[in-house]
Image (tube, rainbow, N blue to C red; front, top):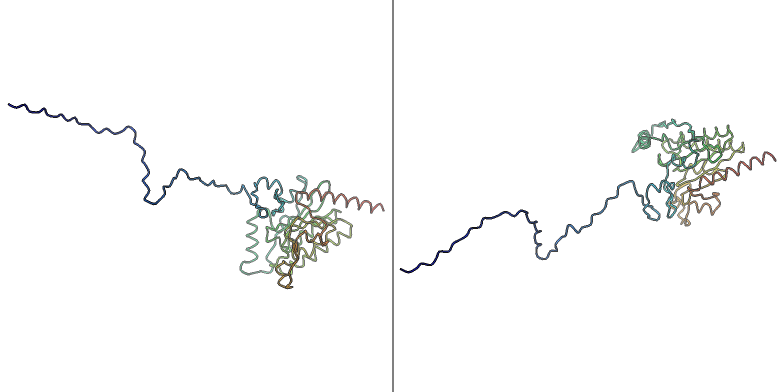
Length: 316
């Protein structure tokens, strides 16, 4: 009997799950397409708002805290950013020396002015935006250096710093009080002119403020006018241009009508730098250009000189 070949024995292997699942490989890109590497992308860092401000003049990025400490003046090019009336007062007067006058005085819509938006609704809107302002000027008595002075500071952020009946009345009361107490007056202007919503009531403030300043001048008391960007129209045509000394911040627009209006009316090319403080200084219309950072020091110097001059006049 022939021997049969031995049967082959099959050994079975049970499937064993791996202890660690291998990482999934990214799918192969289609032909002709480059693979994308998500891990290699650089994420753009988001800069929180309210930390940096770009200078519109030199385009330098300025840290807001340093800008505030520098009185809103660019440290690189000297550009003067807009500044509120409260901030400006704080930068000029000695600590806790300012006593505000007529703080609760508010304008009313005496003419019932209507248009695309009523005057009443505009006033309400601007008062909601600023909890510290009732109108476009803050007035009071404060101390600058060793001098007790009457100070009026206009705020362009409230209806463009326009002069209405309240602005004119507050300034007139300030001037009259300073005349009575024999104090100098300093008015810092930033305005688009008379407030059109009040018609003749706003225009008469031009004569009223100038009349009060004329009486102040009769008493031989100093009046310093400081012009900031912009100071135009009815304000420039009244109390802003009649100071014993007229100072201005650099590169501010100062004038009556705007350059475009003048050009369209006269059909003539305007000279370079027209209606800037530098142009006005060259033509003798203002006395000095003073940076905001040096304003307090210069005001003290001028007040010292005027007080000495007045004392000498009395002796003579």
